[in-house]
Image (cartoon, rainbow, N blue to C red; front, side):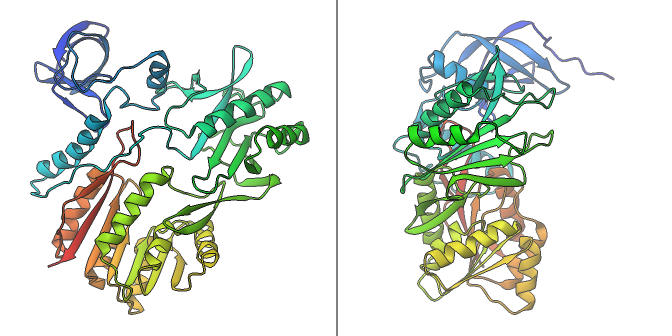
Length: 457
C-alpha cells in the first residue's frame, strides 16, 4: 500500500523548527513527517514551500521567518550568494551556536548508540572565516564572458563570486587577477556540455607561515595558448607567486586534477610550516586547508598520545607526513603508512627536509600494512589513525588491537563512523578514557573534526 505524505510539492505550510540535521538543515514535522529546510534554526516558526516529497521525508525552502532564533546571524546580499553556492551552509548561525551544534552532533550520535561518553566544548577559531589556504575554482563562460565562481547547489550552473568568505583573502584577490588576465588574453573557458574550451579551473595554494603562493591552471588541452604572456603577467601582478603550474585534465570528469603537471614558472612546490616542521606541498599534495586549527588538532593528538620520547608510534593514513613528523619530535620511532605512493615519496622528502631520521614510511593500504608490521613483530606503544570519512576498515581495527598498543589516538572527520569504530574497538578491549574533543576545522560548514583517546582495559 502506498503511503501518502501529508504534504504536497509546491504547497506552502508553516511550522516550528525542532532540530538540525548533521548537514545543518532545520527539521520541521507535519503529522510526524520530517521536512528538511536550509536556513532554519531550532525554535523558529517559519513559512515554507515544499520543494521535494519523498516516501518518508521531504525538503522545503524558507519563504518567511515568522519568528527568529537568538542564534541567527545577519545575512546580506553577498552572503545569500554564498548560500546559493553552498560554500558556507552555517553562515546564518552565530559562531558560538555553530560550535555547540558540532558538539551536539557527536553527543546525539553517542546517545543514539547508548554510549555514555562525554564530549568537550568544540575548540573554535578566533576569526572563523578567511581561513582556507587552498582553492579550486571552476571557470566557465557566463553571458559570453569567462567567469570564476562556484556552482549553485545541486547543479552545474556557475554563480559568479569574487569574495568566497572562508578563503584567505589573498587567494580571492589572486583568482580575480588571474581571471582578468585570462579574459584579456582571450583564453576560452571550458564547456562541460561540448567538452571544448581550455581553462577548466584555477587552483591557488597559499602558505600560511612562509607566504608563498602557487597558481595552478587546469586545462582541457595539453597546450595553453599565450602561456608566456599569461605567466609574465601573473608573476608581475602577484609577486608572492613562487610557482605556476599547468595541470592537464582532458577527460570528461568531475575530478579536478589530471595526471600531467607542467611547471610554467618557479618551483613545482610551495613550502609551509606546521608545528615547527617544514613541508613541501605540490599541486597534488593533501595538506590540511586550515593551518591555525590543524596545529590545535595535531597538538591535541600529541598530548593525548602522552609521548615522552621513548615510544614507538604507528601513523595510519600518514599522507605527506604531517602527523608523523609532528609525533616524531616527541617519540623514539614513527612508522607511517599511506596508500598513495606520491604522498609517501613526499613524506620521505619532508622527513629529510626537517632532518628527522626516526621515521619509516610504507606504501600500502593501512589495514594490509598493519597486518604486515604485526607479522614482523613491530610492537607500537601508540597507534594514531586519521582515516577518510568512511572510517576504519574492520581488518585495521583487528590488526591494531592484536598489536596491543597502550593507546589508540583517533583523529576523526566523521562523527558517525567514529561512533561506529568506538564500538568496534570496545569489542577488542579498548575504551574511551577522556572526553572526546571536537575541533572546528571548517567554520561556517557542518564538518566536524575530533580527537578521541582509546586505551586498553
